[in-house]
Image 1 (cartoon, rainbow, N blue to C red):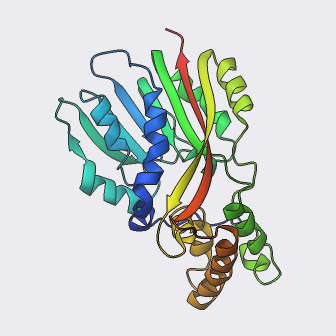
Image 2: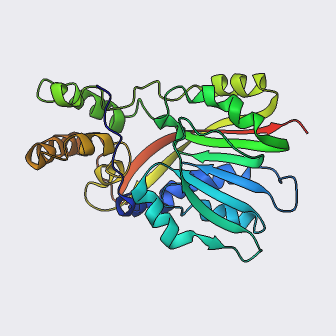
Length: 272
């Protein structure tokens, strides 16, 4: 039986908003100017909308829609960010599943930040999205490339341990959830795009008690927390095991807990 879709917690996700926004701003800096005076932009997997709002700052005349399949995230985005922008554009949000979303109008920019790793076979969606771009439009995305990091490897190992495998095996993404940078470059070039693909490893100096656990509670741990939601005792037991392993893997230093995080970026421009 397929795992249930994870339940998201906007407040938990935003606890590390500054660190999480850094890759988005680095991606955005490499997106070229868009065609047209009032560009049309889609943000796939917009979450609570905090980084989608940065698109309106870059293109204040644009009509921007953030898409997500989490009611909790969209509720937060509607309240905090929806409405007209100072440049005469508009920022809105709508429910959509990135696995099946097909543009129903031309776009100048389709962008996705830390979402496609949740979409099995996401490269198969690229053709539809590139086809929907206006000439000289851009498709840009960023995905985590840290599935072999201790934070993720330990989590996978725990879910397959004898104590948990019957309930949790199959709840997590596989370590091949994202492609190599070379594979992304090849796929985007095959679609007729001029592609710029790169990777960066950030060293986030996290603060507080068990900060790596606090980070993954907002993202990678969500499928497990969802699967054990009806059994609080088991949920706390699992989190305690995971916490102990993370403390060993990511020891605190005098200036916080260093948390290396590799990410893969791509900016593909359609021929004009």
